[in-house]
Length: 337
Image (cartoon, rainbow, N blue to C red; front, side, top):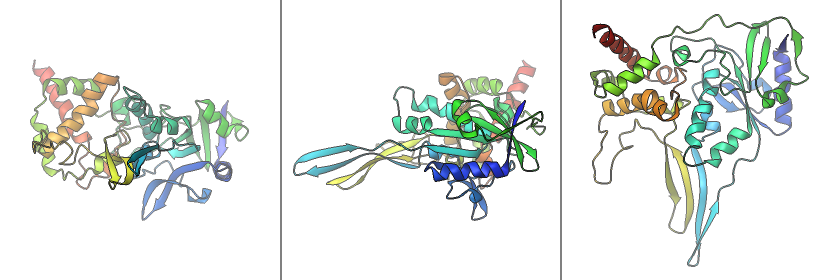
């Protein structure tokens, strides 16, 4: 038997969570676009499977700006104070499954040689309820081993049944705590019939990248890249950051700020030398990192096929055009050998 939940009951759940001082995040409409935002009431949430929010849920685990510690001088004595860790609870509801799938990927980054408790506390105190989505032309989750209803990184997923009802599939104790006593049993089940076609062979791309570091694809496609970094900011798995001191000599804060490998100054040395001095080299590094370097190190692809990078790019570039061409070149090389 499956578990069924109505939209009205779901909004009651949201209202209850907010009333108990939990932070609830869901897609909302703002300035003509959809973003993941904290809700003040249940009516703000837009829980439709076709929604493709511009932002990513990663900012609720890895904020754009985060205080690490503060410093001040009392006379000649330097006083350091650690920033407080996240102590509340938050529920992310209506996230796309490809967004939630980024969380196990980020876990490896923030729990590798250093345990980043700022990220980890948010992970431990967050419940993620995804909504199975309808793919658009930018989506390619199936090409990286995922699907529109994948359970990776989710505590539960909602499968639309139509008529304001959802099938609820629970995967963890966190998910059970949200829905226990609020669902009804039924013999109906949700089905995802519209899945993106597989557009490339990720293993072939990985092999080709290893053997063809200087492929001309990067020079050619990167001519239209503006270097704005938008692709990395909306990407759920990109995680570059900088640590700087903000304030003055007497007092201030040490903070972590998002950065981007697509910015010209990202690899600029103090000597003035820049090993990635043009956009072609920067895009090559990004693709190499996602499809070869990260998989070599952690065993999974640094991409969930969400399509945000192209969907939000002013020149519709993103990851996919590079990968499709590299995949085609790989298969051509194999066929001619």
